[in-house]
Length: 346
Length: 266
Image 1 (cartoon, rainbow over the protein chains, first blue to last red):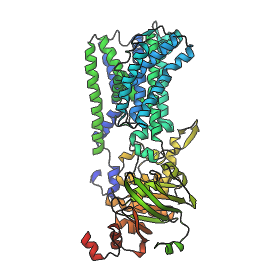
Image 2: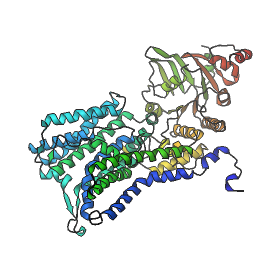
Image 3: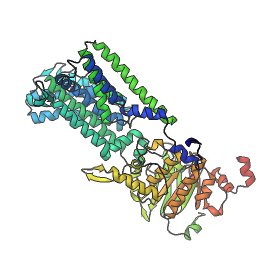
Image 4: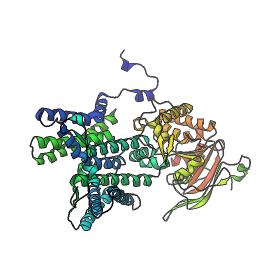
């Protein structure tokens, strides 16, 4: 008699205790660690293909510099996507924040206040999005944030007359372009300040989502808004804060961008929201809400950063970057579909 | 009022709804409905689809606010504007769709919105360890067995999800638990466990309001039964003074129903 035909007293309990099917378990592993495996795999492949350039301190810290903007936008979108929402306006928010802070800084506002301009503009724009989603009750956040995508881009052009504003002060540029020298990393050894900003932001959001009640409520709203509502959670307040946070990180990304470029460009960040959404999805967050981790999102950002970096190093046309990123997005979501299917059969 | 003579002989009601009216635009879902609930009793509410059972319970749980009428709880007049108001005075509801967050583990669902932990500037730093421990003890008290309180709710069977929903409703000394069709979507094997759970709540002194279409459930656990018809009070009775066929007649809007007639109609 094999283990599987042993008599069972209670059919009810058997269904619960049945071991997970092999496919389900495999899918769960792919779902949990797949994106990290992809990151490691890409690094190995790039090390083999470009051994002289890729694994150098300078190149690796360069990747960190390049991903900073997308990483911050993706972090804000991660929170929104956790609630099963979407924020298409982050690229426009970033542009407006960059522009206004460049204008404020160049018109003589003292730098500690100029630093605040970007994030505050971001929070303000995020609250407008939240207002549309909760008070106006527009049918889907897609609509409201599509509206602000256009509107805020227009406002950016209006305030700047469509012209760049350059000459951002050194203090304001520090977060985006500062370097922390690290002697033991060699001649080009220094860690970008932006990487430290990312570390703090990702750590902060990770703690917030997993340990703070409001963070858990965001996850609950993404799982089942009705459950959150009847549990006494003010869902509209949660959503307001969610979009404000997304705006905040877009504004912070604007501050980083002003740091890197030293200027506000009215066309900065066009299409950046799509990169950020792609990173979140590649990182394993579910579009249906309630699923995803900050580690996954960061890995998703890295996948896109490594792809860009690698293809540049290997002198492959930029057109291939778009082609491949599109395919990776579809592949990543297909993994999610498979996981759900395996989960429901288990 | 036919039930006045009966009410006199009983202790003071824990809950009294008087003349509850609820309109949705031009539609009147509830028309001056009265309801009495005594401490430690299980009251069954029956009625056909659209009779107003669920609407009445949503008013009581604070999800809908009544257009008109009064609510007295424990001798005091109360006004409920949100589920939180109702929870604060000890009225909890288990919704028909259960309203659980499938992506969260059992223990987090039980304490959702009321997480244990340290308060810091308006937020709670959730103590997941304490939450797990409290959930395990609470489930033990209700004789609910689960593999682990860390299991995600979406991985549980219908009956187990129902048990988690009931556990959530009783996690904070509820005095009234409202259950909307708790057995409707369950496998037959799981129904008995849920009904036992309702009896266990009554033994602990909790009043239960049970909405059900299943006469077997109603006659197995309820002390008293009340029928709504077209958004109005239709009839009510102690369970031992009525019969299935009579109650089925009430649901269809007829009184003095005979067995033969009930058969014809069904």
